[in-house]
Image 1 (cartoon, rainbow, N blue to C red):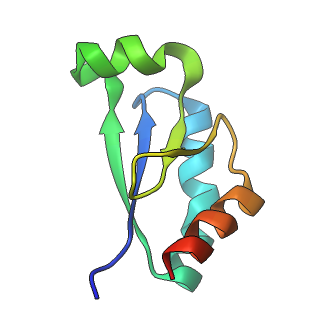
Image 2: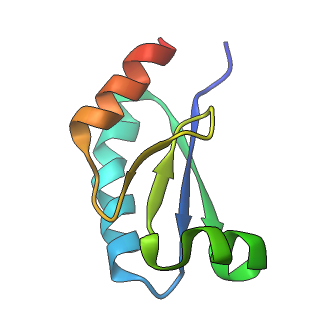
Length: 83
């Protein structure tokens, strides 16, 4: 079975993005998923879609789990549906 990959849409200069990544780290260790970081400033379509909504955490299906801050209950729900 392949590893679950969650995507974080972010900006490199965003402190909320740094906070979300830091909050995800212990969950990654426990649950064994990886995180793909996508800088929206490198893609005009993503910048238009997410704008100031970042950071946005999405599941492997592309569905938004949460934005701005980590929603641990929503993350657990997403991971529970995968396993």
